[in-house]
Amino acid sequence: MTSDPDQLAVYAAEDQLAAWLDTTSPEQPAISVDGVSYRPETEPRFTDPGSVGRYVAQVLAHLRKHDRGYDGRELVDVTVRARRGRTRAEYLIDEQAIAVPPFEVGGRWALRGTVALHEIAHHLAGEPGHGPGFRATLLRLLEDIGCPVQAELLHLAYASEGLEQVGHDLDDGTLARIAKLLRQAEGTRNEHERDAFLAKAQGLATRHSIALAVARAHTARQERRSQPVSEHYRIGDRGKRGLARYVRLLINVAHANDLRCTINSDSTAVTMYGFAEDVAVTKALYESLLVQMVSDCERYLASDDRDQVLRWDRSRRRYVHKPVATITARLAFYEAYGNRIGERLQAARQATLAAAGISPDGPEERSSETALALRQKELDVHDYFAEALKRNNIRGTWSGDRRSAMDSAPTAAHEGDRAALRARLGDGENELGAAG
Image (tube, rainbow, N blue to C red; front, side):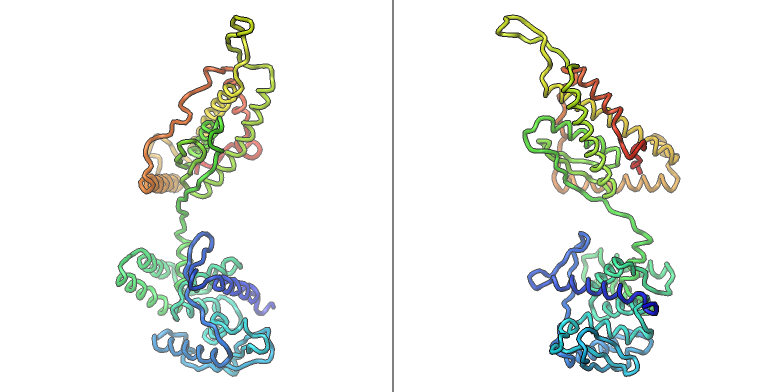
């Protein structure tokens, strides 16, 4: 195995591609991988080695007709024959032949397009084994015969097996030109423009013997910048008291992590808009703070240190001092807790910005690479949020916690404030460091 260290990983990646293709059907032609929808081309299936041989001849004829060069190896015919064993298909370099097991001996798994193309790639690669050269050849071959989506899926499968790097001799500038043409093709709705951009990209890729999937992935790594997302987060059931205070706590955490939010009118859910990593940090911190807040509040409510109010006692026919209602004390505690947490998080955010040499008040200081990245992040989230508001016709502002309970239960509010000052905002003694 040391002479061909990538063999098992390549087989695993191709098994993954085959599994994806097996889930498609005329009724469900699309698949979803990592949240992205793909519509792969139909994979041919065969009944015997003879039909595989006809397909191999058609593939090589297609390459010749369309001037898809593989250092002349595309001009050499390849024969296909049956083999006795059922566990392997192979390319026999000395015979320039492909051997596949027939259906009768259990070779159904090998009588499919992906297996045939794998063996053709061995013929076209001009080198033994399953290294970067072979993988680049197979990706190019898929694209050259009109299967760019299968090529992209195979490249994803390679990456999942630790084989993302595919060999090539191109400079970054040429790769960027190819990728730019691909983005232009994908971004236009004009069919003629799309075909023209694709033709130019394919021409460059063919001239330099590189797969478009490699160029696309390489430039994506160079230019990768995640895009904002939205996530709907459930707060609680409708009618439950205190939901607005939960919402306020979540919003304070979200704003400190550069997120924007929309809130259901009944305060049962919040939709967060921003970058996925910031959403994940926000949810984790909110859930930690929520547990701390509720636990601290329950301990306070179980104590004797409760606010007193004058109430009319009908049986005694006079005003007497009684503890404030539990729900009032709870709301006051939660409200003060959320306010103080918001202040602490904003202070932590400002400290993070200051450590990066960024003044929140002076744009003249926002010139460092970190500052520019943060500014771009702000603009991306702002534009994404504005588009979401427009698309969903969202108007008005949330007023779920407009009525304060703090004046009705000042002791509870004071205890909520104290609890928030003690609350953990991160691991150990670390404050939240997610401003950037």
